Image (cartoon, rainbow, N blue to C red; front, side, top):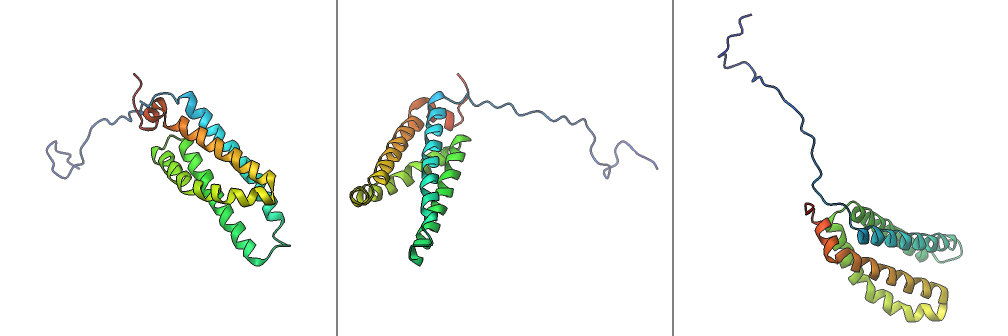
Length: 154
């Protein structure tokens, strides 16, 4: 077969090299590492509460099962968002902040009732809220913001 150099039907030829992508993002700041660790600790505490809640489903009314299912789904969503924060997704830390701001008034409102019925659960809620506040502060201070936006090292 004749392979003429100017054949318009011949595929283009050339050497192709895969260039490895260099991660130009700066190293994760220490406060982001600590904030994510605090959020995971909070999720472990919540998981213990969920495990206790699921033990009660046999003696509680059927509506309790719906409440436990919704609470578990929210926990899974929360864990996924924390995992995305750990991976450096800027949208995840903003989403977490918005969800915290939406949920904080509900937690504070229910705290008065929880203090009367279960002081241990109320104490756990207070500790969790403090952990979330500390983590959110660390996620939004300047070095963390630059890391989440993918800034190049200086």
